Length: 404
Image 1 (cartoon, one colour):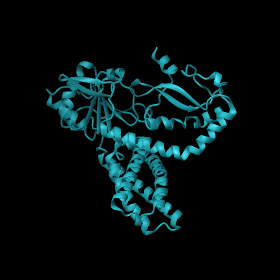
Image 2 (cartoon, rainbow, N blue to C red):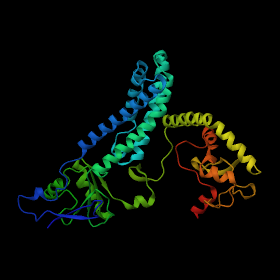
Image 3 (cartoon, rainbow, N blue to C red):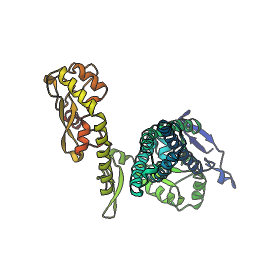
Image 4 (cartoon, rainbow, N blue to C red):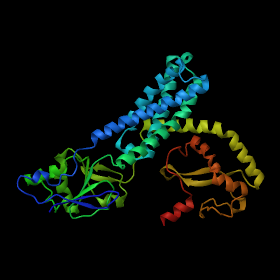
């Protein structure tokens, strides 16, 4: 009997028995998937795009209703005629419709919002360059730009919930081939035992390659787990499959490898990636300046109010500075509103703050809980020592403890 293990969320390992191999029936051995889910994914990408566009249109119609008390107007259509094409170009360029965005709600929402931001910036540039501002409502554009991210995120979340309920979060047929190795089960994948199906690596057995082709029919991704001495053989046997094939190499995980490189004709494990290229760094820095600048203008009254109540609540400076490790392990001073008593401050962060920490002032406990103490970090972003999007820098005391 040949066994094919199919892993699912309900059962870690459910065995399907296909029967013994008989002459003329080998093409049925190990056939697991009826067909690839590529067409399904293309349909879902199209549906996501339609949902995004409908959400954007709805946001600007609401904006027009607020401004003109009527959603349908010539100015609304002019605005959408600029916004929708720029969003479409930006979203298709940044991968807002991909397998990763189907599988991850946060990734899909993030890419859609980035595309909206870029689309809005390009729309502003086009309107200025084409000098069509007379046919264009700044209020509708501004309010629609504020509403559209919320509408798109809501649309993505609802769509993701529906798709997860219908397809179980599995949008690709993944097959794992176990050849003398074991791996933890992943929901939604299928697993075959190579020795049970008479599969072995190499290209010296045409009949084995024939059987393997039926096992792989309908697969979108294949992962092979085997001992180190058999990896090269499996790689050769699977190179001609025209599928996404990966060989499991646990050692790369222990190294923390993020990619593969080449040195003197030999493959290397990349454990750290360099900075973005010049264009991407310029784009990221421009976004940081625009977002941080606008946020500072918006939150300036609130920041002034917080500074006053911090000063009145307890003696000491309004701003607390603490050294953190930033890009390239360079030290910088992170800015925060002071939330602790002056005599109890911990510049190195040797003691982590807790909910009932007795070092907090009355105001400090509130601004810490609501994250208002972090508003001065917008100045760090403007200065270039921090970024709106990036890893969170830890206090020196906590990082030093981790490194021991």
